[in-house]
Length: 385
Image (cartoon, rainbow, N blue to C red; front, side):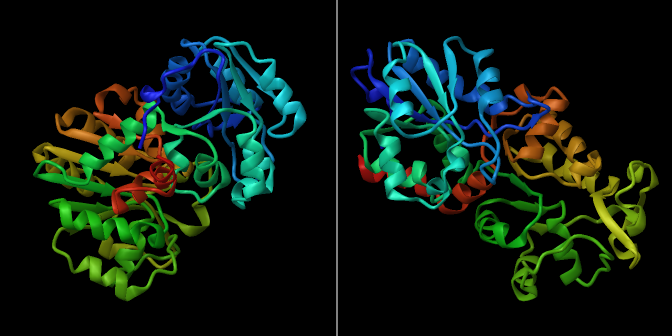
């Protein structure tokens, strides 16, 4: 796989950069710029050498949102940024031709065209017509079989960006950690976590399952989970993981009556219960203090810590477990690698971003890479090389 450092000529060359710009926007204001900050070094590397930089990205899942506010936020982080409200076609090609060397043009949301998520070769060909080279720097989408991820790299000379190189190097090392090693996986959706849990159980001394994901395990283990969020996980597959002595589950939880779970003061109404003392009309929304303490004890002994996913219902304000573990990892002295949207949001809110060894821009992509050691978008670069 070639790096953008292998490019020999930059001056006045139109270069396409697939960038991680999918950040939250509220009332036209970007509320988190972490991914934008991480891609700036690649954009500056190209622009400072006189390239004409064309940025391709997406925002949201449905293709209805615009990247215009993202471009504004990016322009506050690095100079020379402008926005064009289309993605392909003659007007888009004209905008690229008129782009001055050393400047950065953010094109409109790729997912506004169904050819992106449908991996349409014709759409990829239209994208390729915008530039002479392609740089992949959107690790967070490299697990997707989308046109700009797996087909576009086959149509142009293609290279890995600086951020993508960092992600690959760090997560490759995390697959074979220094021991003793602790992995913590939260969030939800057993089917998307099963494979990586099996992989981590082979290489980590302890693997803790938290968040809504833990509900599936607690239920199969014979505990009452009430009205808690669970998935359609195969009980036999869950039991196989529970039987592994390296796997750990919460020992206590914070619960709320199901009828009060969506109340604005739901957090204030929560009670701490042992996992054996959850009522049938309650909802598990966070882990409890005994679980926090058990994780802290493991983290203090660990030389490597891997963490992906919140440990409670973060969007409902149940942040105690997540925030507690963030502080513990930041103070642990272990080599720490974290990722996942709410996980990163917690560390940003607490001002702890610089206290971790590496913060990935990927959520699902991070888990998929840890499991497989590669991603479709990375394979496309290697095949092109």
